[in-house]
Length: 198
Image 1 (cartoon, one colour):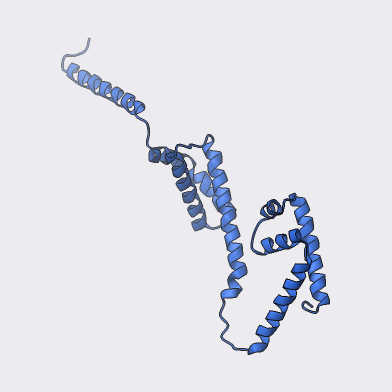
Image 2 (cartoon, helix red, strand yellow; image 1 turned 30 degrees about the vertical axis):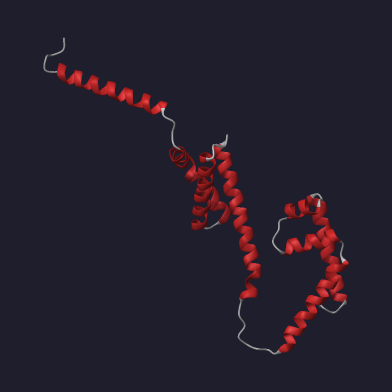
């Protein structure tokens, strides 16, 4: 038999337990907000996504940016009512695509870096004239190539991937690689015969 001075404590505890049981039921009936959904997903997957991004780009800050951007995009999808069915896979795909895009932009930037480097030494008009001659020869040789080959080489020079080039010219990726290889050889041989390339 319970002692009389313990009963008020037990009753108070039972009342507080009843209140606690009511809270989850009302919370379950309300729909969670998108920031709560994405926050929970972030807590579940952030570490593994960060590790994946770090392996992809080998830069801690860039990996953090990729993960953050992937969750921003998830928030946009959830707000729009387009919740991915496989959230984890969707996030991995977004991080991978962002890493590829980042790498492509970095490659294009490195290729164009020489164009923005200032040369203080004025060498006169001769280097500019020779550069104009080389460009003219290159344009002539590019004009001799077929439309697909010319398009493929120009797209490759501007940082497009092999799949994007294949899609643009309507060929399979293997056929596109073969076309580009042959076109580069033809281009080089022609420029050597013109004396433009040694």
